[in-house]
Image (cartoon, rainbow, N blue to C red; front, side, top):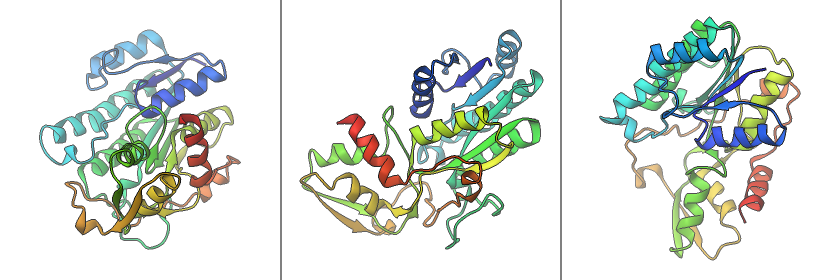
Length: 280
């Protein structure tokens, strides 16, 4: 199989590259300098020349707060909507399978039950709107695709909440973290493993939701991250920590469908422990 990874130098793309390297699976990785996904002609030409069979579309604009205002708003749309449509169109033209990564931000956060794949989407920030539009572009264009919604992503190879907490703990004796937003953390390793698993095991095409199992608040997540550090973590409300982009207060996604594929989903506590052991 000829494999292409877009956004190969990002947090998830780098994790996926390392996983494929470990398994001695060949691939080609591109970033924005190699392949401008917002230019349809460039994307079409690249796919025609290289004929990828599997496309892991990890390229995305993920600056959630910046996406609320210009110039971030325009870049967010151009990358997440136009870019994804270009990749989907080119992938379908060469008969490739596309794996697209989406987000829990497609939901409004008002549901006090778990969100299933069938729950109507209702994004309330610009990032969520463009990722949902990307989902629709893939579903309406592709014959063979996986859309994978994920949440609260952390990993070894990029900026994320775990590194932020660890770095703040080096210079602060006390930290405050919001305690009224509930969700599921996701280790990039778990996400990358399912992306590969889906292809290798002929998992039925369609929409899936993947995070690590169990749920928590950001405060509980931070407390677990910093449990061995000399720092006090205190809870605050979202109102005490205003941000430009709306954050869902409750975004626990149901994992029943993904577990039914046979893929084993570790808890976020186990995932965090393994991640911390890798970076110590």
